[in-house]
Amino acid sequence: MIEFRRVTKQFPDGTVAVENVDIVIPPRKTTVLVGSSGSGKTTLLRMINRMVDPSGGQVLIDGTDVATVDPVQLRRGIGYVMQNSGLLPHRTVIDNVATVPLLRGTAKRQAYDRALELMDTVGLDRSLADRYPSQLSGGQQQRVGVARGLAVDPNILLMDEPFGAVDPIVRAELQQELLRLQGELGKTVVFVTHDIDEAFLLGDQVVIMQRGGKISQAASPTEILARPADAFVADFVGADRGKRALHLTDVDGRRVVVDSDGRPAGVLAP
Amino acid sequence: MNWLWSNLDLVGELMLVHLALSVPAIILSFVASVPIGWLAHRYRWSRGVLLSLCGLLYAIPSLALFVALPPITGLSLRSPLNLVIALTLYGIAVLVRTAADAFDSVEPDVRQSATAMGYSSTGRFWGVDLPLAGPVLVSGLRVVIVSTVSLATVGAVIGVQSLGSLFTDGFQRGIQAEIFTGIVATIVLALALDWACVRIGRLLMPWSRPDAAHRRRSIERVERVDAA
Image 1 (tube, rainbow over the protein chains, first blue to last red):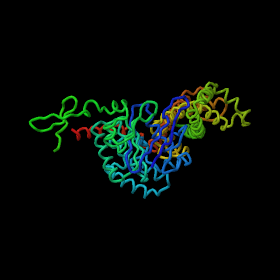
Image 2: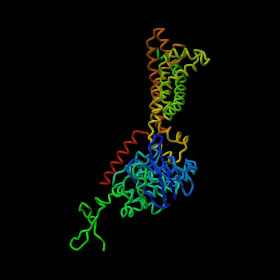
Image 3: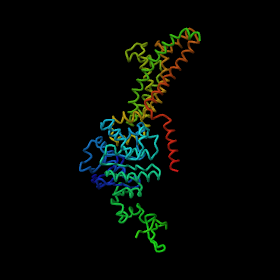
Image 4: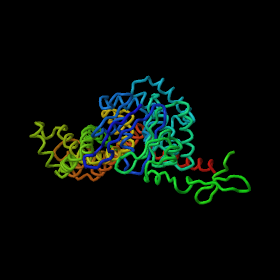
């Protein structure tokens, strides 16, 4: 379990990125932090592995304040996947996946065996093991990034807009892969995105953040749609428009669900 | 040509002497420039000072430096070591700025992800920053190689033997072929060292080969075809 207690982050130039955040991130679930740019969602994520230290309040992992843990050791125990994969361009795929185990002093042979298994797990062909990242497609690079994040079998996996830079088809594929993986592995995933559809698809808990680093609502997707906390949330999730504002019409005795533009979304199952 | 054939031994020997002067200077300037360049990259406030100071070195006329060094180092004017030190200083003047740029050229994303993986700061320097700065460092080193090899000839004027001795001797004795041989031999040596530098760079940094980019493009094309 990850807990933020009255966490604030003010940068030296005076910008407040996160203000007074209290939130509990439940274990073995996916929590998605969603908001537009400048909402402090990435800052919040990076406080978990001490890439950013809060200027006020505490971040606790299983009851331990992360400020008391050596940042290098802390990071080696937490998976991290970022946008544009952040792979080391001078290391082959297998070396990239094995990075953290090797840093931790795992024997090379063992680290490589594990890396190959992980490539299977994330759906990468083993023949790619000796390629350099620049020789892979964007989607493949992102899979390598996920495999690398899982390499030490961490309890926590931090994902910072990991699918932001790939095309929509590949993104949809990667999202499904993540759902499958999460079903198998049950990690505590903290996922940052600005895409509310992605948040609703992946999140057990969705945290909606607004400018200035304040939390507007933290709840399950269903609850957010049913009871948006305020006008900002309602507007952000688009509950009153487009493909989320559905209504029923009768067509020859069948009940068809259509969106606000009149486009059919499906039929109502009896 | 006749002059060259009858003096092959001399030219060969001078080439070795020339190598013994320039190679240590090239290596020393590289070893000194990397940390200075890293400091300039890491601490913004030091950048202006460090880069200007090192750049100024290049403004010192070479003969003046050769003459000014012995009182400081305590070496004799004709000591080859004296020349090596001077060449090293010029090498540093050229390379420090490139070294700072080389470290700047490392993708912030990559650096950040390395930190997030749990690299310590020293681990990240050796494992990530330095190798990724490599291609730019090599391009700077190539300039230093060529400039050092050509600058080493000036030592002949103060009596330090090198391929430059072929110029001074050729001038004094009016042997055109000797001067010409000196010029060609210097260029050949510079090109050979430059070539070696590129080869070693490719060997140490197989990931930086230009064909990696080509292959990527062709992979993307294949995938696009697959998707369609």
